[in-house]
Amino acid sequence: MPTIVLDTNFLVAAMLRSGGAARAVLRACLMRRYQPVIGPALLAEYEDVLGRAALFAGATLTDRERDEVFNGFLNRCRWVEVYYAWRPNLPDEADNHLIELAVAAQADAIVTRNLRDLTRGELKFPSLKILTPDQCLETFPCPP
Image 1 (cartoon, helix red, strand yellow):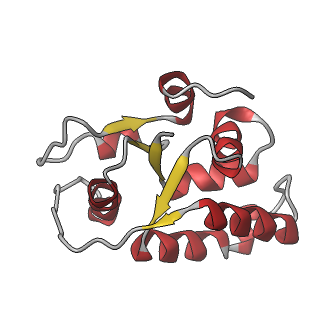
Image 2: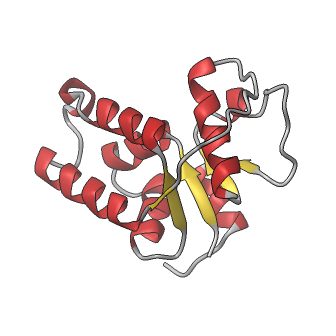
């Protein structure tokens, strides 16, 4: 089972829209086809962004449904502590924790909608893939 880190922008897309690749990857995590990992920094980021009511105005899921999906997702996550700060020097400093979490978890990939920033770090990890949700489904296929 592939181990993946899910960027916050991916989780927001999965919660905002019905269907699509982001929702399919989230569904695969809930069905234990992918092993998502989470750490303190990513959990804080998820909670902050998912708590922004204005962001989800008009979303397909109600607040209660979004909470249920998020709690189900957290139940499937493996908790990982990051003990070493690699500082990959990404263009957006706030994204460095994703690489550090992925390295600490020995993840196969980070799934994001922000390929440009996450692939431009100074420190490279050749075995770590940075994938869009569509690429994740292609690279690690799973039955629907």
